[in-house]
Image (cartoon, rainbow, N blue to C red; front, side):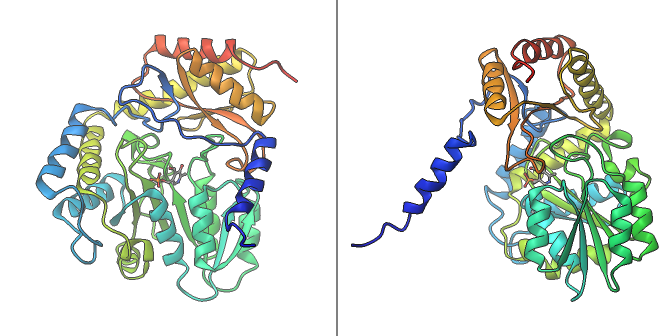
Length: 382
Ligand SMILES: Cc1ncc(COP(=O)(O)O)c(C=O)c1O
């Protein structure tokens, strides 16, 4: 009898069902009637007419696709402009745009560990794309407890050779910020590089949204490389690596997710550039996004919910179980509010949560409505 090669999948599906961890896709309409506290559109730019127009113009002028790897036919003047403006805005010598933030993290981690014997020291709360970068690099990786600079210092001190410390700037689950200044000091003491994924910091932290490195006074520091996605605050799609010019030149020659991937589509490149220019003109968007996050947190915590104090735009509220989190998110949805629902394996500590993202364009009334819905639909405390 022949064996069906996919039979094993059913057992996995059953285990997921039993654990309350089944994920499903829910297509959303272009203009959802739900109040959105689930997307990463922190500055409310994904639908901004100036940004969509910049994307559409780029598509009409440069074509629907970039037609090849950046090293073959896929590099346009638009990519070069976006790189120059991102580097200048964030305070770095150079920038390299890739097809996604995920690809940018894989590129940065693997390229920075090219030298044999390089040690990676990685925060236990890091995003999956940084973790996958560590795996792909095949470099020795020491995972240290979350936001623990002493553990970082100890790991670096115990290694003789090149090293890279890798961290999110703002952690995507609880929205807390990494101790970047202390980490940079520890790295400098040991001649190690620091790689910071600023996916949740760009556009929100630092003066005018220049990012976590600018906020920490580290932008352009010689040992620092930052990555970011263009899909959150900039409302578009794509990723970027920012750092010293020789690091960026090394990535162009060594980063496989840059070399062997089609360049970012012109529409996304143009939209990101449009969003960046708009943010430069309207820096108050960054301030408002942070204020909305703070307001959400204070009102939810004030109502007795177990919410995390946000360092940027992410507020998470703990749920007693994966099932309770799913039911809570569904009850919010039925009441007209879209919230994120994080469960294992997306949460390193196994705690299920509602994940709320603040947006600069939320009105005070919308904030009040959202808080009212979340509090009203909360599961009973265990
Ligand atoms: C911290 C962090 N890094 C990287 C990424 C990946 O970026 P992208 O969606 O552009 O691939 C995300 C999420 O999207 C993220 O939250």
